[in-house]
Length: 128
Image (tube, rainbow, N blue to C red; front, side, top):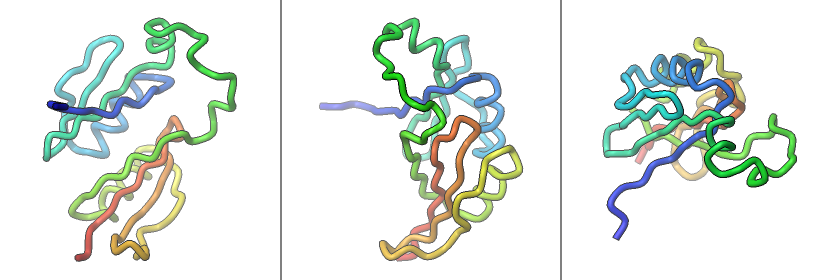
């Protein structure tokens, strides 16, 4: 039985990423120590932030393939009460707009952006 899960994003600057996500989510981290920052969302979801250098120290540099670090490798899809409000806050805090909030064929209104480390963030409202 899995008791709890979390998503951990590897970030180039843990402090800058903490400031970004704290401003976008409007919640303080539940943990903020050198090497790890965690945010607990409603519903129990936890988002963790760990520096790239920290995970390399932990697992070894050979774990990471030599790829273009600018290519997005994850999408964080978050259902929220007001997608436009969250997307606007993300843009105001340095995210790059990818797609304005719009209706998608799977039934959600979704807006997309890139965080400062080029992770894709999707803020979605369920319309059903």
